[in-house]
Length: 124
Image (cartoon, rainbow, N blue to C red; front, side, top):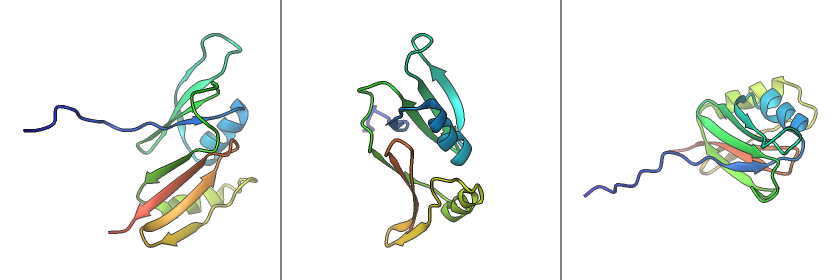
């Protein structure tokens, strides 16, 4: 008998503190696009959904939604092409390299809020 429960995908929520820095890093540097933006009213903290090539992340300025210093592991294809794209942007706060690990090639980036994203092209 099949399980009636089906998980569609996980969407990590990452803590952010500064909208302009978040936009510069996630949209400008990493190349994500905004899916939606939400504030309960003007001047309130921003909750934003972003997407690129099937990866969806949520960024939240709300205290308690997430802890700074989180890590997200992202299996992907084309990690070396992504690394070349990022290096080509001459981002002043990071020039990530690809580390060859037994399980795959890993490109790790650090956002302005101490969160890390590990993009990995897995082996085997």
